[in-house]
Structures are given as structure tokens and as C-alpha cells.
Length: 390
Image 1 (cartoon, rainbow, N blue to C red):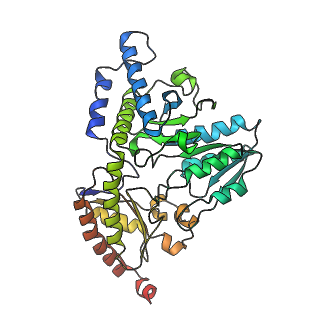
Image 2: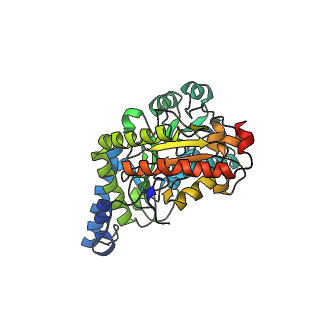
Image 3: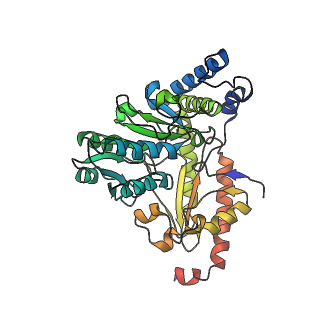
């Protein structure tokens, strides 16, 4: 089936034409190694520094606070895992995070546990919000790092980051946020919000895969995860992904220039989609009703498996996603949906549409036309549907 509607922008975005155009010369014309002293290398170095300025401007940072890397997972591992191990002898071996983090964070925390760290995972409410009061109670004199994602990748809820960062700072710890889903889609100012470290990834904002960055506040030392050469001011070894970094910078520049207007447009599309999907009986919205990412529309459709929804929508040319167990090879439903208190039988029917820059009114119309048909067909095939509605 030919793809008709791409509604999985939280998984990845297409590289925009402007970004692709900016990247192209750095594959074949300006291809020098940025560490080389001759002119071809200097050209490459200049391009990287321009991208650093573009990325910094998007989040209110200084250029020398941006370190380029391979993406969000590497940034999370560095900002949490490496930093915690470095500061632990001085501050303490206690780390705080939440039960709804991306696995790049949760698995980093698991690794820290094996090294003798104590990890506290904060609960969230029914909307996926972290309580500032809960953080106040959890933070201790030996807490070294607090990591709370800016916005959840599954349900789209945006956390009260500035307030959480303030509590962390007052408690003497360092605050990190995995902002992979949020950068380029909502306004972020790391200085105003009091963020010490931040993770971002190019492929979530119409840039290339395999390229990302981390913001580390000036004056905060974090040893490198990858050792080798002196790239990135000795903070991340390895020859730079020149074209990818140029693409990330351009994507950040474009996102910053049109952020508010695009946020308004995508939010309107999302609201219309949510309103239409909720007309389907036994369907509920997951995540906060308003305090959520502009393009995120996540649901649980009762008495249906999420994997079946995705496969049948794909037959109609609609790309979406699910946190259902079957899609991940696990017998358990999404840890995020479990954390917000949904029972297993409902969480298994999760469905997430994430709209973006290339989404249109026609896309929403098509989803709202086909989804009820898919739901009706799957429920008619279900051995439990008749008993369920009774």
C-alpha cells in the first residue's frame, strides 16, 4: 500500500528540503576533516561553528555550551551516566528521575544501579505530570542528578520543567532534561528555565538521523563518554559528522524562525483530530488535555490490540504507532501507560498519531475517515467485544 498519511513524527521526521540542500555540499564539495589545518578543513570547521550557533540560538544557550554527538541516546548516557559517576565521590550516589522516561534514560539508570547508585523514580499523575512537591520530598543531600524529560514521547505531556529545575538547584543537584521530543516544537530557554544539561536529536525536527547534541551549562564539567581525539573541545571524540551537523544547525534555524506560527497550526490540526477520534465509542485521550506537544494525539481504544490497529491502518496507507506489547516483543504494555494508572486491558489498545510540518487538513480528514472503519472491523473480529460492551 502506498503511504498516504505519515502521522508518526514522534518516531522520526523526514529531512526537509532546505536541510537536505544545506547538507549536500558537505558530502561532495566541502568534505574536509574539521581538524585539518588546510583550507578544506578550515571550511568544514567554520560550518560546524555556524551550526553550533544555530543550535544554541534555538534553546537560548551559548555556542560553547553545545556539544555535537550521535543523538539523544548518547546525550542521555553522557549527561546522566557519565556525569553521575564523575560527581558521585563529591556529592553522592543518589539519582532522581521518573517512571515515564525514555528507555535511553531508564537503562542508563539501571547501569548506574549496578555501580552502586540508588535511583528514585518519581510517580506521575493520571496525565503524566510530575509533581514538584514529590521532587521536593525525594531530593536529598546526596542527590547528584535529577533527570526529567521535557515532554513525553508517548503521551505528549509537557512537564513543569522550570519549577522542577528550580527545586533541583535549591537542593544542590544538577538538572538534566531529555528534550528530544520538544526541541524545535515548543519554546525552550535553558537559561530562563534553569536547565543544566539537555539532550536533543536532529531527526525529530526535520534533520538527519544519527546526529544530535547536548547542552552542558558553562562551568559544569562532564567527562566524555567517547575517548579518542580532541574533537568538540575534548568533550566528545571522533571525527565530526560534518554534513549531519550542518543539517542539524539548519533544522534548528528553520524551527526557531517559524516556531510559534507552526505550533499554532499543528495544534489546531491536532485538536481537530482529537475531537474526531474521541467520537469513536470506548476511546480515551491519554496525556494532558492541553499541556502537551502540539502534534501529539495519543489514545487508548478499548477492546483492540494496538498492533492490530497499526497493521490495519498501514493497509490504508496511514503510518502511526502504538505502545502495545506486541509492537515491542514484550508481554507488558507501555511503561508510560502503566505509570499513569491505566489497566492492562486498556493500555494494550494504545494508538499514537503525531502530526508535524508536512501534515495537512486532508491528512486529518483521511485518518478520521479510515480509523472508525478499522476500529469497527477489528471489534467485529474480537472474541471479547460483545462481552466487553455488556
